[in-house]
Length: 304
Image (cartoon, rainbow, N blue to C red; front, side, top):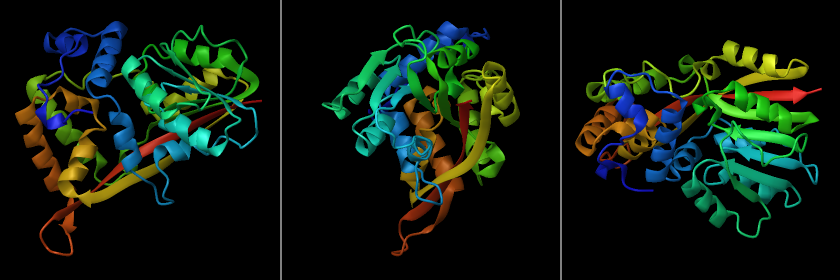
C-alpha cells in the first residue's frame, strides 16, 4: 500500500458528482470504491487487523467465530479483499471448501499470493450478480465490512439467499452504533470536516445504503429477505493503542473520506486527529501515546 501522506487526493466519478452538486448513482459508487482499492490495495486489512476487542479478537476473528469446525463446509467470503478472513479459515480447517469473491482485481491478487496452495477459489465479481455461484451451494456466507458499502443492497441480499443452502447461515460485520465507542464520533466528525472544506456536500449522501448502518433498519432488511430465519445483531468495540501519530494514521484509514484529501490537507488532519487521540506520553516521557476505539456490529442470519 502506498504512503497515504504522499497522495494527490483521490478523484472518482463519485467525488466529481459531489463537487458538481450532482447525486452519484450506483455506477459512480462502484467506480469510487474500485479507485480507492486500486490506489490503496490492502488498506482494509491493515486497519481492521490493528484493532482488538476486550477479548483480544480483531473484527475478522470475531466474524469467523460463527463458523463451526465441521469438515467439508462450503464457505463464501463476499468482498474478500486481500483474503485475511479466508486465511483464518484455512488455518483452522484445511477441509473447508472456500470461495472468495471481490470486484477489485488488485485485492484478489494479494489474496491469491496469501492463499497459494490453500485450495480456495477466488472470483472477480460484483455482489449483486453472483452467477458464478450455484443455487443452494453455500453453507456459510461471510461478509466483512463491505455490506455497508453496497448499493443497491436488496439484490445483494437476494443473491445471498439464493446461494445459501436451506439451512445456511449469513453473517456480516458492519458499522456499529457510534455512541458505544468513546471518542469515535469526534474522530468521524473531524475527518469529515476536513473533507467538507474540499467538497462541501461530502457526507450528505452515504457510501452504500444507509439502512445497513442502523440496527433496526438492518434487522428489518434481513427479516424481509429471510422471513423464516433467526436474525440477531450483536455489538462490540475494537480499539488500538500506540504512538499517537501511528494510531491517527491507522484510524484515518478506516474512513473512505480520508482518501479524498490531498497530501498537505491530510497531514494537517492527522495532526488534529493526533491531538484528540492522545492519551499520555510513553515511559521515557517523550513519545505521545494514543488510543482509538471503533464500534462494530455482527449480523447473523440463520435459516431454519
